[in-house]
Length: 80
Image (cartoon, rainbow, N blue to C red; front, top):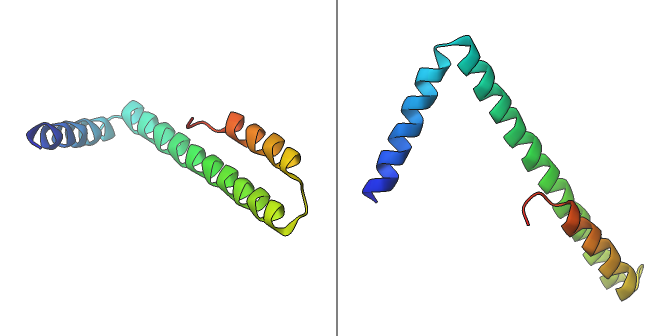
């Protein structure tokens, strides 16, 4: 627990100190934007997976098509 607290404090210190310089602010902005973009991308993939799950249940696609699409979605995922 102590290590986690120290790590959080170090991250806060680095964040606050890097905000005081234009380069640090730009870097934090870029990292924040990348994190939001990646989150949106993963959310879209989850939505696609939910859609093919429902299509399989509704009988719109067969198991083979489901497996192909699911494999494509999993390969596109950033978090494997």
